[in-house]
Length: 256
Image: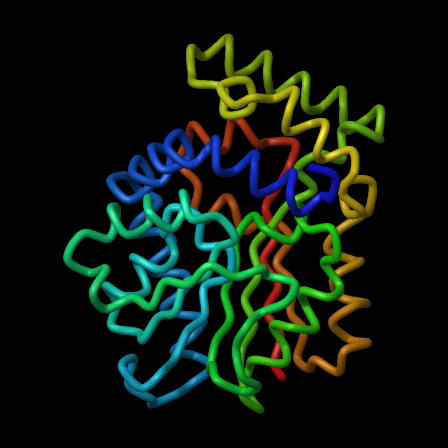
């Protein structure tokens, strides 16, 4: 396997079951209600007065289905895509009876096999950092949005510590705090060596975000670009806050 895309598919296929367990913990933890409230408020505020069942949402990089499941529970019409069959299998399993209401498809986030202007909302979490061509992905997500549609992207500078010494020191401090408090380490419990190898090849790992995202989205003609620099404090569990203290999650909202 030579391309970054193939490496990603291989890695996340192997991680599907373990990552699904993470999503199951989120679905059964405080994250479920925290994320549900955040997403529902952002969408309904944008589509003032429209019923949830009249709003079509695309969840890009659904993984084991966390966003797709909570959005379907809320009543939205959801299509969920991922580039690995193993992740989609986990997503269907996690969704249970809700799976019949979710349209699951295997697709590359950078080249969606979808017609223009199909969706009112595009959502994504922890994906753009892991793409070989994130600018192409943003272009695609804009393409499949209807005019006036809403983009909601949640991400972080997850592997910036590979390139920045201050970020490395802060990352190591997080690891020490996790150990001192007897918590699960969300980095070390993964195949960290394999993930770091991929991250070193990803174009966004050394980039300062979300400043990069604002420029790209603006160049694509997206409007009303709003960025919240530390959304994690509103949605994460206490364990996540300790794990990722040095890597705050940001939210980007933009309108086509």
